[in-house]
Amino acid sequence: MTATAGAPPTAGPEHGTSRRPPRPVVLLVPVPGTSTIHELWAGTKLLVVFGISVLLTLSPGWVTIAAVAALVAAAIRIARIPRGVLPSVPRWMWVIVALGGITAALGGGSPVVALGGLHLGLGGFLQFLRITALSVVLLGLGAMVSWTTNVAEIGPAMAMLGRPLRLLRIPVDEWAVALALALRAFPMLIDEFQVLYAARRLRPRRIPRGRRARFRRHALEVIDLLAAAITVTLRRGDEMGDAITARGGTGQLSAHPARPKATDWVTLAITIAVCGAAVGVETAFHLTR
Image 1 (spheres, rainbow, N blue to C red):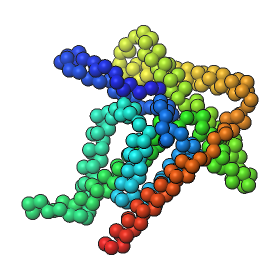
Image 2: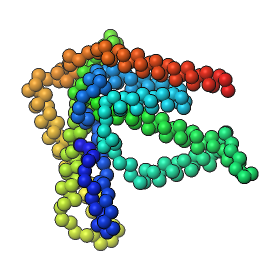
Image 3: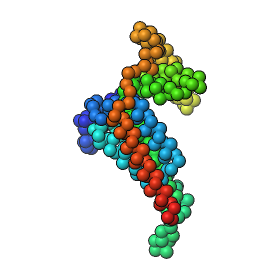
Image 4: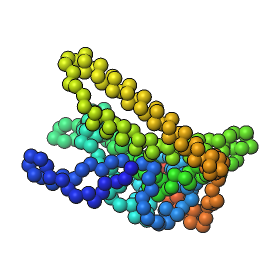
């Protein structure tokens, strides 16, 4: 899966207007290039994401969200993430967001604004904006890990971070191997399913007559696609198993020489300092109210 940024604009068939094709969602594919963010240990990025997620769960205030958004923006700037990797937002998504905002605004609540004798409660709308901003920040945080981290580094990082759990007889290495295999197979299977769907659409088919015939045709197509997808998945799994065996077994998936370096400790210190300052300001603001 690759981004389609920089593609030449296409002319509309009716009005001749230039229109860029929609950009797809890029998952588990690191952006080419190198930077300080790219060279960080994968475990450091996972710790940052986990810590910030817990922080936003316990303290989802405006100050905390703004501080995390500033961290994400700084990381994007340092990593030199191009604008073209951002997926295109479909129009129906904006319609859903607008409907959600209008519905939340009907709930009212403080603060109340008076407009020409009409009192409007903005509490529900502000809560909707806060939840939306929180969701965008968390999505950006996860996207940064996906755009700057090689999939092969996540499994070993999880095995190292979960090393203390081995004292409790928890199969950390097995979990790390399963995670590594899932992350490696996910983009590959998405490509396979897209090829299957495109091939299915190219097949000639008769136009059914009647609603019942159309429903039957759609049901048969879904069954055929599921059967083909299962077959492709089993074949890919068998090929991956042979490749893993030839390279030394599943133990190689959770073994990686990477360890945290000085930049990793600096990154963790900056994250803790910014999040701690945001929590302090948020707490002080609530106490003074």
